[in-house]
Length: 204
Image (cartoon, rainbow, N blue to C red; front, top):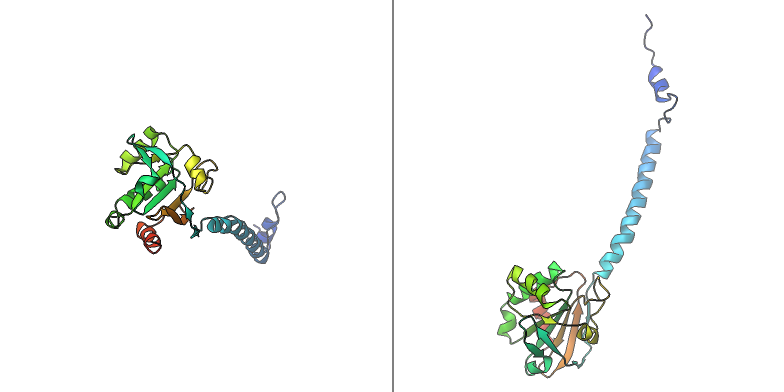
């Protein structure tokens, strides 16, 4: 009966048809290289995404372009009718964007806007039935204004989000005398209502 020699494991490691066993050092180096390459790929994706998600704000003032749009209740609404009180225009992607709808619900639920006499007008490019269904789902009572794209374009909000033919997630502040005094676009698709209120009140 033959005995098993200490060299047999080494021979088994080099069995014909199987790749030679790599040393721990080579395996470790290979893992480090793969990890470094993977990290570089992730950084190349994540860093631009983070940069593009940063809000862009402007305090450039101008006379706010007037407009008249029909809202989801069928009423004709003109910006000029709000002269004498501050107005926030909330341009957003509409019913296909859950975050946009939740944003309006959160704003509507913050009583400080009404308490300070600030009107909030959400503006979308949806059909009335489509946006009404989204409003009903989360019990939003504030009517949305229906835009064909002309007002969104006039205020420079088209293509500022994920879609070139839709507004992004932006706010325009118009003061009581009809001047646009602040704008903010938020690619993260969210702005805390109290933060929005703070941005607005310090400019009024």
